[in-house]
Image (cartoon, rainbow over all chains, first blue to last red; front, side, top):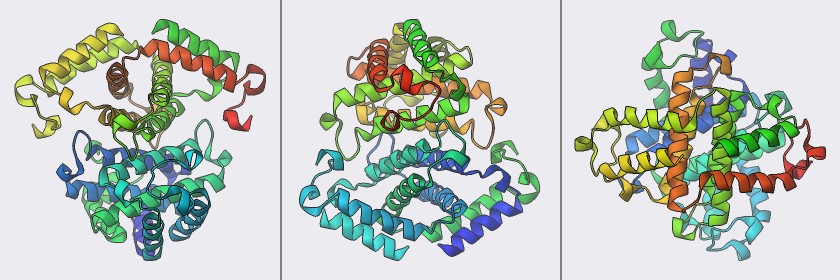
Amino acid sequence: MKNALSELKKFRDEREWEQFHNPKDLAIAISIESGELLEEFLWRNHQDANIVNIKKELADVLAYSLLLADKYNLDPEEIILEKINENRLKYPVEKSRGTSKKYDQL
Amino acid sequence: MKNALSELKKFRDEREWEQFHNPKDLAIAISIESGELLEEFLWRNHQDANIVNIKKELADVLAYSLLLADKYNLDPEEIILEKINENRLKYPVEKSRGTSKKYDQL
Amino acid sequence: MKNALSELKKFRDEREWEQFHNPKDLAIAISIESGELLEEFLWRNHQDANIVNIKKELADVLAYSLLLADKYNLDPEEIILEKINENRLKYPVEKSRGTSKKYDQL
Amino acid sequence: MKNALSELKKFRDEREWEQFHNPKDLAIAISIESGELLEEFLWRNHQDANIVNIKKELADVLAYSLLLADKYNLDPEEIILEKINENRLKYPVEKSRGTSKKYDQL
């Protein structure tokens, strides 16, 4: 994702937008974009959702997520791998297999 | 991010969770996790936010985003780059420099 | 809802929380609570959702919505009625009957 | 809010939209609308937000919240008052005065 991040920052800096990109507003932006992504599925099954739009909205969620990670010098891949390790403890295979329950209800 | 995605799918499949991971619920999950990320900034400036928690919640947003992209065989990096290209047209440098206005108000 | 709003403000003021309740953070709070409400439906059909929890999360969404409306001296009932009037123009009965399409696609 | 709810249901039924309004999609709609509300505050202080738009988006959040409450025969005012009572226990005045900490960190 290094290429994507570098293009995102170039796009941002050409427009002098970093002044707006504090972490709080980036987190707000992620939330807004995730709402727009979700709107593609509103009132319908996923079979009837528009994949061209899904692609664009998902790209926006990812883009702001990379920019926020960058603000904290976090490597996106690394933090996912760390979180999987934590989740292994919260969701032991034996207890969580085949159920959608949250860890505090297992 | 190929390694992260492959670990996410392994984690999911060990728990037989793919049955729950239809695109609509994955989009819901992204939205929920983005709300949890945002909660780290609620009632406070970003300087007072807890970076350990931010890291975990951002990892969750990214994880579900990768899983949703995978459902549609989308490459995360590629869709970001495509979206940047579209945004170049919507946000020409001259018009959008230094302003946070949306493209339809430029 | 006058009674609910007055109790909400009393609860807030006893705790000296108005200092945190600027409109932007109230809007953030509404979004976070709506994510918590949505989590009750994640990975499941609504028949399997927990109504006790739904009731609590929906109350939180409503509570912050009333507090935000109050910040702008808006009457909740009145703004809903105004919005319905606008929506009558965007969604004429003949065109929108039985379809979940957005107004710009009718 | 009885008048608003009754107008919302009339608007819905004239368009035969109840078929789309299952509780899960109504919760999704609340979340999407709360994202649109939040967008009015993105990249800016609340002083620069557009109150005409805020009014409309807040009305949408409230409208879907009333419709979801109605699905479960919940009285909006009553569930807020019940939640305030619960919150009195989670947030005792002495411990929570002047702080924005969550109850599990007081």
